[in-house]
Image (cartoon, rainbow, N blue to C red; front, side, top):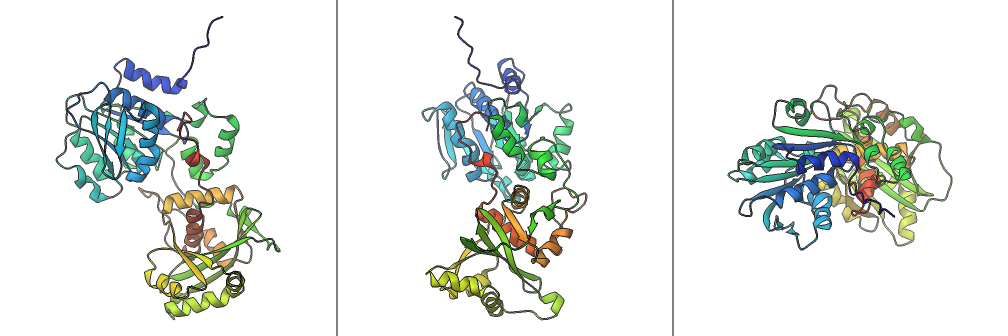
Amino acid sequence: MTKAKTTFFTAKQEEFISKIKYGGLKRLNILTGSVRAGKTWVTLVGWAIWVAQMPLDKDYIMVGVTLDTLDNNCLRLLQDLVGERNFRYNAKAKVGTLFGRRIRLEGANDTRSERKIRGATFQGAYVDEITRVDHDFWQMLLSRLSEPGAKLFGSTNPDSPNHWLKVEYLDRADELDMYSDKFTIDQNTFLDPEYVRQIKSEYTGVFYKRFIEGEFAVAEGVIYPGFEEAVCEAQEGGFTDYVLSIDYGTQNAFAALLWGNRGGIWYCMREFYYSGRDTGKQKTDEEYAVDLDTHFGDIIEGKTERGNKLKVIIDPSAASFITTLKKRDHKYKVNPADNAVLDGIRETATAMYTGKIKIYSSCKCLIKELQGYAWVADAVEDTPIKVNDHACDAMRYFVKTMKIACPKYQYSNRTIQGV
């Protein structure tokens, strides 16, 4: 009986591995495409194979948006792939060794990042989530890849068609010493079809085009199309927990949303909204605290009677109001919001689309904002129009901070091929 051949790569991944086997690598080697398409996994395999053949006395670098994301997305996975004996690292010290070669580790999420590598010289670089890496850092990194035969490996999900990676590099691949290819989730034959179906159901609009179809797509029009499907009438009883999310404003509007958990679904059941600009009267932090006590008093009392506090999620920049709330320590448990805008918008869209959050029809201010909450037209980077967005921000803080709809692929087993 002929023994079946073990397959380690998808057909799409084989195309990339063949570039390494047969000398087809370029100076820049970038894979783009959807989530769970297998691009990160195979670029790390390629990176490890290539580094193992390079000089021991040269410097190499691995880059992520932050050191934490680099660790979560790549470093642990690389260690799983080649074994701890072959790859050891200390993320805090920003250093590792891969097959005896020294690997520098860096985060590159702002314009100051490029200073970290000024004057350095690298034989090779690996870059995760390239579209989220600072442009100045990227350009500095390319100038530092000056050793003979230096190469860059990297992968990314798509962004706007106006993104610098698309305009300056991917669209000019034929002019540059560059290899690029697009991967999609449907090409990853190691994934269970039901798992793929579930992930596809978690995205809508521009996020579906980017994270499922793998296309560089424009963010345009209303940010949450079809949000009306999340609007419902009040539900009676059965709530097991409550959370208050707040977008703090003095002259700008102050928006507070009360969320209740019923049967695993979070309902935006009550809102408080006040605009000092519209009324001509600016309120103090203490006045806002009294407003919360009054508007959500029944919920607060119910929590305190059981010896609990009402959880409050608020933008961490609202330092003075956070201090005021903390003084009312018998009522509120204050938590700083995760204020990642684009990730928060994407996860909020997923939460709406999959029915994980609902909005009472009585929350008129939030619903009115959602009707006009839109992307800035023709922007280089995805940018929401910053007008009448305060309740929308409070909703985003809630979803992102509570991890209501963090996509399943972010929690999947790291050892599954196709990350």
